[in-house]
Image 1 (cartoon, one colour):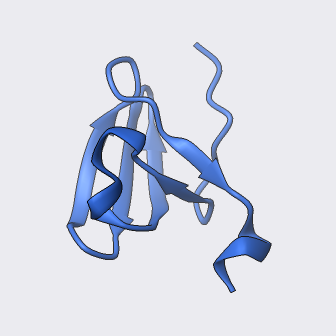
Image 2: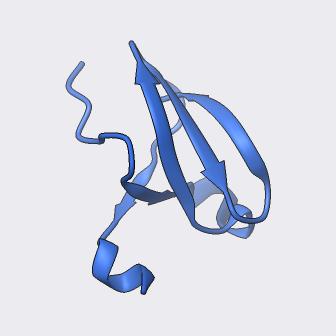
Amino acid sequence: MHIDFEPGDYVTNPANKDWGLGQIQSIIGNKVTVNFENYGKRVINIEFVELEKIDKNECK
């Protein structure tokens, strides 16, 4: 599986938009740790949850 994210990238979880904007903290295998503004830190298995990458310029 190819992961198109790296620590520091901003993402949203389209299935849970109310979590708000998240920033990737770490990636280990298929587990991505994301700190969401409205839901805190979550470890997400990207085999089961699709994250949407957000352009950094949209976050300012």
